[in-house]
Image 1 (tube, helix red, strand yellow):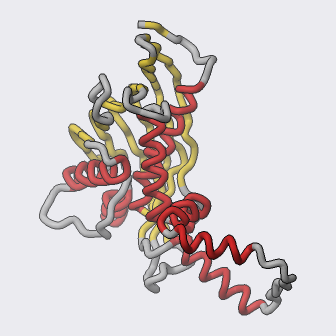
Image 2 (cartoon, one colour):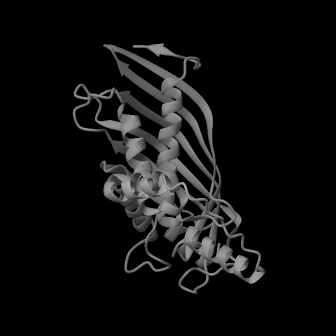
Image 3 (tube, one colour):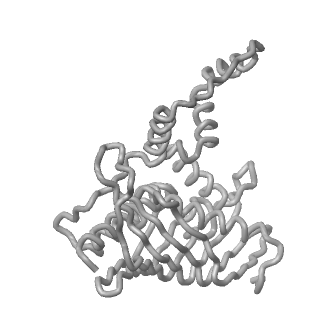
Length: 286
């Protein structure tokens, strides 16, 4: 594994905002600090991680004992805990993106072949003061998704539009009144190839943003998932094995700062699916 791959992985895996520079500190400490930083940023909850260890020989980073704290006022101190997480770099860990970043500098894609969670345990519960009946998992899913839409509006156009409407209700009313205009409008169809190419390039830059380093994860798997649902004085635990969360990032990858939020969002979405399912293997009532 060459030095470039090591630095790229340190910068990108789960979240880094620094670019290619590790100042006066160990790689493992840096990885650990970045996991905690973005986990807390997207969830607004306290995160803990015992250790992070990158192997230069195998290209695998192992994270041990990760936990995310629960919303205050619930019986369980953690939302979920994971005993270990292993991230495997691809055989060819980096390549250059054809399109340069908006800053006219080269954009590097880092490819992670697989992220594998060991045993993930989570707890679902409704706040007694909740008027909506939403669980802690649903509340943090919405919070994470909203933060992603705020930071990356081009990738979340519908949610971003809703947020904008709430922030500027008077502007939304103006747009609504404009829609009532009954005058026929003819939309211009652009045919000039140079203009079309320019518009396409601008849209790509808008979607990619300013990130000079981006990441692709081919596969994310949870080997053992246990969700404990606390409701109406009953506790039910649902178990699943080898849960696949899919791929993260298309050929352009995801911005390094975005990846932590996307991972958290998809984990929470999976927990909501399990939470609402009626047929799950190995249900236990405690």
